Image 1 (cartoon, helix red, strand yellow):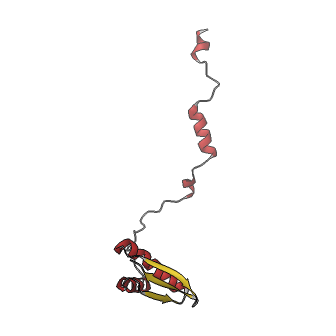
Image 2 (cartoon, helix red, strand yellow; image 1 turned 180 degrees about the vertical axis):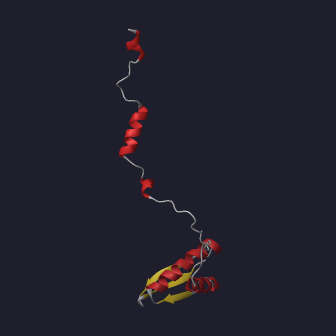
Length: 112
């Protein structure tokens, strides 16, 4: 009777065996990648390079007085000035309002 009690779980699978079986059936996605050695690291790029037209719009809006306005004829101009107005609101606490006008364009006013 003592020999039967010494190996009561002989035919049962262990947790380690189950983990090994699962790992063999489900390989990790990283096994699809290849490690390369000796590839040089490129130089670090600048975090933010402001485009020239964004800078010009920001400088124009920054120089405006309260209640001054600028007409924006195209949607591209609208996007540039809207971006610049958002930057000035964060950086310099200046406020702007943009409205669509009847002239088939937009107008931006400095409000604060």
